[in-house]
Amino acid sequence: MGTFTVSLGVADLQGQQFIELEALVDTGATYTSIPEDVLERLGVEVRETRPFELADDRVVEYPVGYATMRVDDREVIALVVFGPPGTAPLFGATTLETAGLGVDPINQRLIPVTALLK
Image 1 (cartoon, one colour):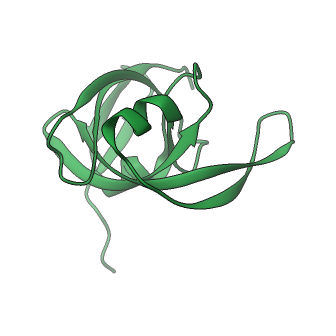
Image 2: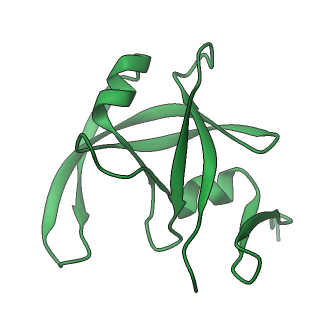
């Protein structure tokens, strides 16, 4: 599957002020990762620290919290990783699922999907 980016709005839990970012859609990433300086500017609070396995097999710990995410016409509250400053924002699998979105790799876009309750 090819990679592509989407416009992602990020705000604190109240959703008062959004910062628009270009985020790489990464279905291999569990959570969405946003540079910590952006999250701190928005006032997103650190809730805890969790371990993460990186592409090079290293395990590192990063803080996590909750933020409001807006993509297309959908707005959700999702767990967000405080990534190192200067890293590219990643739009991860759980945020996609929470927003009811899937990936169309042929047309490199997000598409609405029906959630399961069975």
